Amino acid sequence: MKMMFQTLADCTVGLKSVMDDAAESNTPVDIKDVLARFTTDIIGSVAFGLECNTLKNPDSLFIKYGKKFFEVNTWQRLKALSQFALPHSLLKALKYKLTKSDVESFFMKTVQDTVAYRENNNVYRKDFMHLLLQLKNRGTVSEDEKITDEDGKTQEKALTINELAAQAFVFFAAGFETASTTMTFALFELATNPDIQDKLREEINTVLAKYDDQLTYNGMMEMAYMEKVLNETLRKYPPAPVLLRKCTKDYTIPHTTIHLKEGMDVCIPVLGLHMDSEYYPDPEIFNPERFSEENKNSRPAFTWLPFGEGPRVCIGKLWGILLFINV
Image (cartoon, rainbow, N blue to C red):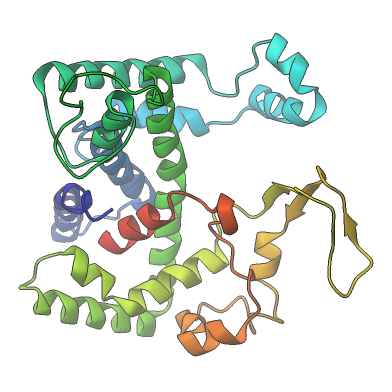
């Protein structure tokens, strides 16, 4: 994450320019749309190594196919439900795919072109794509600039080009909607709670002054109140309102007669936990102080699950936090 920070920070210049222009002309801003385009620029740069410029060009192909991926019509809903209604063997025989073919083709070609250009021209950038290229050609990642070993041989456990493209696409799909939506909710809460907004602004200005008004990785990590605001936003508006897990062994929930059998699907009501007054008094109120160390320690474990928990915790957790604080 620290390696990619500067690439991420460079993208915020475009966002600042858009917001400055809107402020000077005193024109309203559709902040969700702006943040969706900004997130596209960030992910396009970090995951694909491309300058998408969707902040300046709202009609770019990246934003077009990004939005199309999340468009849901009646047919898409039926396809999604079929995952649960039909046997996996039948879905495989029918070559079932949830993603749209044109969306998949666009991202596959984008990745293939990027990989070919970097490998042919020995291009190095501190981004996610560089790590994927190392995995493709070396079977491991390191902090150096090389994407191949000295002997030029590919390791047996290296990623294939299809696996590499899939990882880049997952990075985009997981971050595009969730990040922009979470930031939009946070800005809404700050706008309706000016006292919280003032306190957060004071912390930001204090930290920036410490680092000569430069946005730095270390400075961002010092913003404790910012983290509380993020955590409270994710409590009220979790990206996934439910989590689906599979029981890996027979288990009886302590102090109950509820017995879970191995292989049983379990649905965890994340939003229900987050809005339970037993754990969060007055849950409708936006209160970042719920996440002070004292208050966190007073609650049972697993009552805050915006990223999941355990070995299946969201792998993009740290990336999402970094992106939120940066904005």
